[in-house]
Every structure is written in structure tokens, then in C-alpha cells.
Length: 355
Image (cartoon, rainbow, N blue to C red):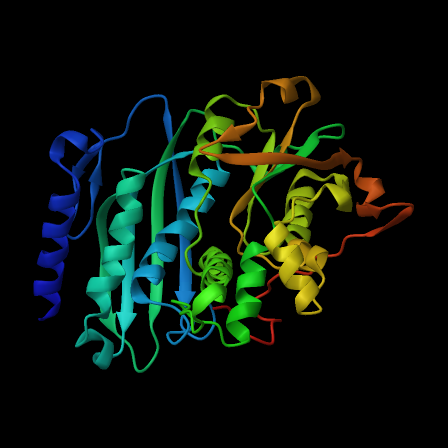
């Protein structure tokens, strides 16, 4: 298969996954020309996100599977668009692979995972590029979405008195990464028989859940759409680098401070249990772990009552309040309060790559 055969194969997969009736009316031309063509729609604004995934930095080939990587390449961009309160519509994926990977079934499996997630949210693949790299895989994921005019939720809209919320649980992906670092791989196989078989399978199911929270994250698209379209969030960011870092990012853009309650941070009981067995601190995983791809957002006090308890089965939790900038970004635990310094992921400071 040469590059042009590959592109035509992708065009057929797009056609099989999305009928013309189901495609957004503003898409005029997708894969097949030098660029995609869209029709501007009055009253709408375009949101564009891009994410780069580099082998040995953002993932390792020996700890994931190509279909999970295809899912994650789209998921991280979906999370960014969700954090803007926008509706995701079109994707462009560029990928560079070594020759040995090109001659394997890696790309077929990669796009299988990509299209499975794309179908869930009616995302159309409209372009991208493919190239050869010396020895590592490089993936560039671009996602385009839409909001109503002036409808994007920015990081800069928080004000003192706003309430701080997060979706889902924090620390799951970091716990999954710790399992991988200790040698866990998918799928986990039971090696026991008899009366202990059921317990062993249940344990493997729990551990696989945490591994998948790292390797196959689920972006909170439904929450992002609701918060954006109903204008419930005053500011929002997705938790990709870690709560400590991303809260500081939001506060810096809004020129505010914050106080969060450590006891209110939603930590999965599985993470608490795993941490107890492996001498880990679940609070540190939740604060600094990153890659949960949950949403962190602020809400005006008068709008809090309009928040639903769940969207797509995912709950939300109030964890604190926005304060004036002179208060700084603080966290309290009982009678103790301290500065919450950014402790999450930084590409040029980290000693190890992600998985």
C-alpha cells in the first residue's frame, strides 16, 4: 500500500461511517483535495484545537494498543473542545510512522479506535497527512467545533464568589499510569482456579478499569455542550495536566485566586484502595496526576441551582470557591491551609514520559 492507496482507504472508511445525510451542512468538501472546504454560518463561531502525541513522551508502544491510541488521539482533542463549551464536528489526523509500522496492521487498528469514538459524537474525518519517521510515531490531532456567537467558554471568565466544580473522579488516570509503571498490561489474565477465580476476575476488572482511564480516556463532551449552550459556566478548562496546574492556569487567565477543599475532591474508591496497598497518596494523584480529562469549571452563585446532578451518567462535585487574586490559589485540609502550587505535567521539566 502506498500513501495514495492509504488516503483512498480512509475516504472509504469515512464514507462507510458517515452518510451524506448525517454530515454537517457546512462541510462542502472533505478528504480528496488539498484542503477541506467549509461554509461559514451566520451566528456561529469556529473553535479549533490541536494536540501532538509523541512516542516515548506521550505514549509507549509496548504499553498500549493501536486502537486505544487511535481513541486517545481523538479523545484529547474532544476534551479541549468540550472545555470551550463547543460542539465538535470535524477532525484532521496527521500521523508519521516508521517503515516497519507502515508495513504492519498498526494503522488499521489505530483508525478502528479513532472511528469508534468519532461515531459516538458524529465527528467527520475531513483531512490530515501521513509521513515516514525515522523510528518513532508522531500524531497530530486537530479538531474543529462550533459555538454560538460569543458562546465559547474561556479560562478568563471566573470572578470572586464563583463556585468551582469538577466532573467525575480525579486521580484515576494517574493510578493507571502507576500500574503500568509496575508492569501491568492489557488484558489482565486470571491465573487462579477454584473458589478464588471469581475474586481474581473481579480484581482484574477493577485494575483494567484504571488502566483504561489512562489509555482510553472518555472526554466529557456532554457536560461541555450543556455548560456552553446553556451558558452555565463562567470559565472552564479540561484537566489534562493535573488539577493543581490547570486550576492555576484558569486563575492566572481570570486574574483571581481560589480556595479548594481537599476533602471535597472526588477520588475514586478504587484509587484510595490501590494507594493504600502501594503506599501512594490518593490526594497527590488527584491533585497532580493529570490526564483524567475531566472538566474544571466555575459557576456564578445564582446559576448553581440550574446545574444537573449528572450528564451522560457522569456526576459533578463542588470543590471550592474563587477568591480575589491577592488570596492566591490555596487548598485546605481540616485546620491546615497551604498554597496549591502547580505540580502537574510539564513537557520540558518532566523526568519521564507518559504512557
